[in-house]
Each structure stands twice: as structure tokens, then as C-alpha cells.
Image (cartoon, rainbow over all chains, first blue to last red; front, side, top):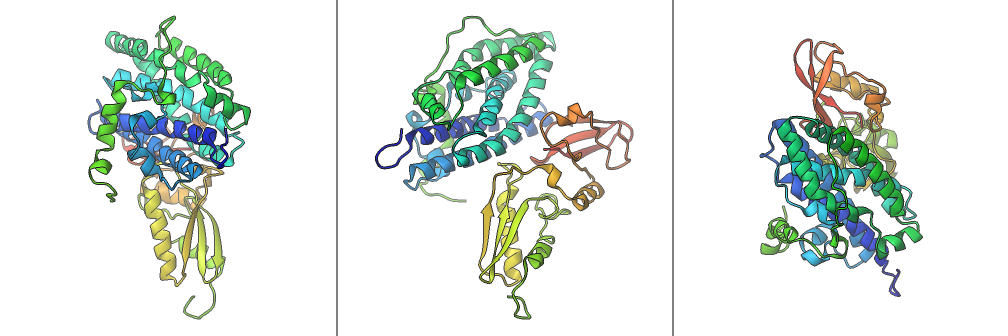
Length: 256
Length: 167
């Protein structure tokens, strides 16, 4: 989808989706800073958030460049309304408790790593190099979140119950990452992005193995909850944005 | 321009950059860290190509500013900084000198050649305690005081320490 004026909508959407997933999850996990159950987790959450916000800067910077209207990564992050966000619904789901937070992180990381690994082969070199940088960080995140899901799932009676409850609540949101829509298909046909069915296969394999080790079971026949890729979000995103964007909206152009 | 009025060489610039410290671990220089990828002399000024360690590392902007300030002090103008993402930075690029400086400072350096995910586990690599040298150590947390470090503990001298994680 390249319009007459040269605007590459597919590439723009691809960069926005990658950036918005990282941004919204980064904002979510950074809310644990100073509140996590133990100091090590507090530091880990803040660092994961930092990596994700760093990646956001690269992806949204690229999206602004492709759009060619002079919008910076900050403009895209702080001055868009909810319907213009392209993140999947999973990442905007609330923190609830530490079990939900970790399960959401794991279910995201398990998609993020194979997606970034595949994007390293993108026909668009700017996408490939951001993916190369981010994939290393995502690999580290996935190692950590897999370990924790297994330890808490196969932990005490209470930690098991909480992790299972989190999985039941969040599993329906995972299908959206690997269910291709028109943008995904257009990107795949031009070699900009991967064929999502290959990512789906990888996703199902890795999550099945980790959840088995964690003694957790994904709900069977869960409906796929989606819409985020097209800008149709759950009510949670509006609250998140009103907090995240408050400063730029109240004091337009404010700088550090 | 240098005092003698001759143009500095790229070698001079590399040498000057060896005096630019990492803002969070000041015992190592930006050259020791392996983040300076390229240096070029250009019309009395310089172009320095830098690669970020972690995409969200807050030190990145400070590093760029410090490089620019250091080279301006040497009379170079303009000083331009370029970012290069690919190939992505790896701890395997930290110089041997950088590794020994980290160790003396009390930070266990990364294990050479284990920069890819899972390699530490596969290689069954151990991290030696920077205080007593024992390899009887354990990871406490995968993250530490900065994005580039993890928290470890020595089972022999019981000292907790930072490990510059392999990445």
C-alpha cells in the first residue's frame, strides 16, 4: 500500500504497531517502580520498562520518518488519541497484581522475540536494524519471564492459583499478535514483515512448553479478543493515556 | 585545530576518546566499552559514530554530550555524532583493558564469548567474585543498578556484587 504521494502506509503501520506495543507495555511495567514486591523485581521491572521505552523511541522515530510530516517519536507517543494507537489489547491490560503483570510480560515476550527475530530479515533495512538491536533485549526479557512463570506456576498453592487466574484472564488476548490482518498480509507479501502463521507456530510451541513446566494450563476454546491493531481498544487504554500524556497536553511543547 | 596548527589525525581522536569516561561506570572509557564504532576527520572537525549499549540506556545522551565536549576542548569544530544500530553492540566488544578495569572497580566483567541469549547457561559459565576470586557464586537478580548489570552474590566471601552481564 504505497499511495500516490509516496506515503508507505504498510510500513508506517508496521512501525507504529511495534512501537505502540513497546510503549504501552513499557508504561504499564514502569508503574511498578517503587511498588514491586521485592527490590530485585522493582529494579528488573524498571529496566524492562526502560528497554521497551528505548525501543519505542526507535520504532516511533522511524514511523515519523516514514510519514514525512515532521512528527517526532515524542509527538506520536504523547499527542495521539486512543483510536490512533495500534498496540495489541494484551499490553494495555491493567497490572492487577504481580501474577498478572508477570504473565502478561511472558505472553508478550514469547511473541516479541520470534517477531523481532523474523523482522531482522525485513526487506526494509531500517526495520531490520531496529529489530536486530531490540531482539537481544527481548531475548533477555523472555529468559527472565519464562523462569518466573515456571517458578511461580510450579510454586506454592497461592502462587499457582494466582498465575492460573492471570493466565485465564490474559490468554484470550494472545491470539491478536499472530492473527494476520490486511496490514500484516501486505507487509508479508513485500517481505517487510514475516508470515504470522510461522510466528504463531513458534508461539504455540514455546508457550506450551513453558506452561507445562509451570503446571499451568491455557484455557481451551478461549475466544480471541482483538481490535487493538486497528485502533479499537479496551477501556483501559484511555486511562493509561490520560496519565501518560497529561504533561504534554497540559503544557504543550514542554521540554526537560 | 591543535595548538601547533596541524590537523589532528584519527589516531589522535581515538586517543582523546580514551579519556572520555562512561558516565555510570567512570573507570572505563567509551573506547573500552566498544561503543565508538568509527572516527573520521572532516574539515577541521570530527564525525564520531557511536552505537548504543541498550536502546533505553539513559547514559546514551550523556555519552554523546561528553564526547562532543571533549573533542571541542581539543579544538575540533564541528563535532558531529552519528548513531549506528547495526551490528548491534555486544559485550564481546569490551576491551581486555576495560575488563580488567571493571574487575578492579568491583564489577565482575562479562564472560567473553557468551553474548548471545542462553549462552551463559549452555556454556555453564561461571562468574568469578571480583573480591575474593571464588567461582562459587550465584545470580540474585537478572537486573542490577544499571541496565547493563545483574546482581550476583559470592557464596564463599558472601559479598554481593554487580556483574556486567553478557549481552
